[in-house]
Amino acid sequence: MRTTSETVRHLVRAAGAFALAASTVLVLAGGAPAAAKGGETYGDNNATTCPQAQRTGDTIASDQVEYSIDSKRYLTVTGIGDYDITAIVVKGGASYHTYSVSDLGELPWTRLHAPQNESGKPAEISHWFLCGTRGAPSSSAVTTTTTPSVTTTTTSGSATATSSGSTTTTTTSGSTASTSTGASTPDTTWTTTPATKVTTTTIPAAAAGAGKDDLASTGFGSMWLLILGGGLVALGIAFVASPKLRGLLRR
Image 1 (cartoon, one colour):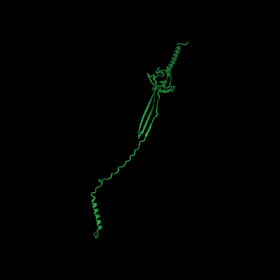
Image 2 (cartoon, one colour):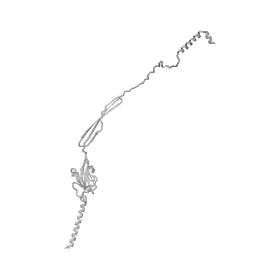
Image 3 (cartoon, one colour):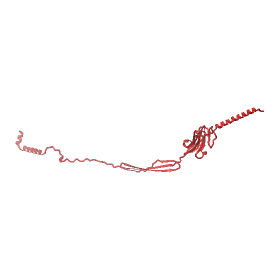
Image 4 (tube, one colour):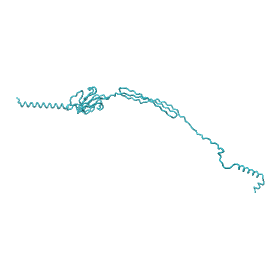
């Protein structure tokens, strides 16, 4: 039969084995993240893009949407603008949670968090991002059409230009698209009248005839010339008629 001491030893060994097993379970339970809840998917790497988180779509930064974070652990998304979001990735510690928007329902999306750490609480959020695409903005579409009308008239070397334009604006709600018709359809009329060439000829005025008062005055009269001429004529006649006078002159 077994003695009391042997029984005690068996009990001690059994208790030690149980304690060791219990410690192992606690360590494993504390080191592994808590089971995901609410449709999130657990990931154990430092994902920073949608492909790294095994999600399709573009990686959309958190500053592109409206959100708030409570106690550094719980994320609430209140607005996403014109983005079509399919998933949200929340990273904390050494792992992350991925939330499918199809499971979250309508906005706001509340209490999104990273996986739990050893303390049993969600790890503080180190970073987070969204996956999806950018949709068409829901604003008004504006179409502007401008058709200028130009009329130019040129008369005698001077030009007059008249320009008028009409603008039509159409606004349609539901989508944004801007169409601008840059091509102009001018209605142009040209009228040209050549300037008349004027030739000017200058003819100098004829010089007026000199009057009596315009003759130069020398200070001598003409009467003495007549007397001298008459005397010379008389002397010539006498010289021809008188032989004595001719003889006197010959001496």
